[in-house]
Length: 297
Image (tube, rainbow, N blue to C red; front, side, top):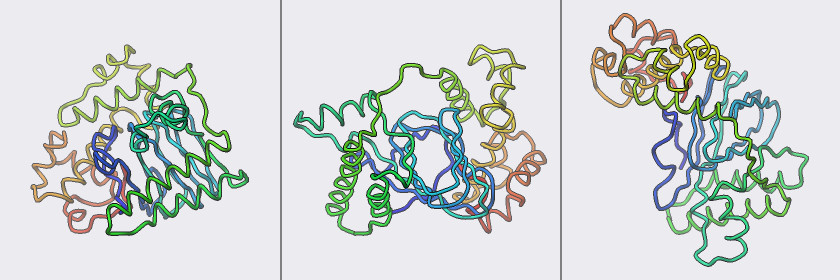
């Protein structure tokens, strides 16, 4: 079953279920711009780009995509996706490496599964069509995306066997890479800031408090954040607040004034102005006709 991408940054909810942490996502978009906002999670993500022009950013490193390819996001990596394509879908599979563990400590468990779980072995960043492993991995990805059965046992068996096939193809081609030690600490600083915004967006957020989190002066912090994320801290905060308000408009019957206050806006006029800025409509019109192509998580 496909899931639409919810508004979130650090994804606290499990992908799939606790006992079967696997999920497929097909995120629609109908305008240029950000498809998936900066976020991270503890699971592995596999993204398939079939066509179109995209910018995938992983741990502050940009990747420009203009043709068919597969990308992998390792656990904890901060990432986002934007596009110059007018409409389409972003397709992804998200799963926990723990679901493929074996109780017996055989070669697969010791040399592959266990190092992946411990972060010592990483998935490759990208596989292009000219690589021999591309077609079989892509075809397995498509099968997982399109799998449809009401029988839970059959679904889980096919899913696990398909994921293990992907691991086997990557391993046979020696595409797994050892984790590097020169980790960019700026990624952790961004995570800390984003987490603070996510947890405190209902309250007034001050630049001085965000800057203090990462031991920077306010001026340097604003330049750092704008360069890394593409928006000023306040623009980013307000956009996150608007995404939360869109969720409440769609999923609840709360009055607009209450949603305004719940999402951290201290007056209705400012809320309506920001809502129109990001969605080109009003809260009441959005509630009547939610558009999946508006700003995404």
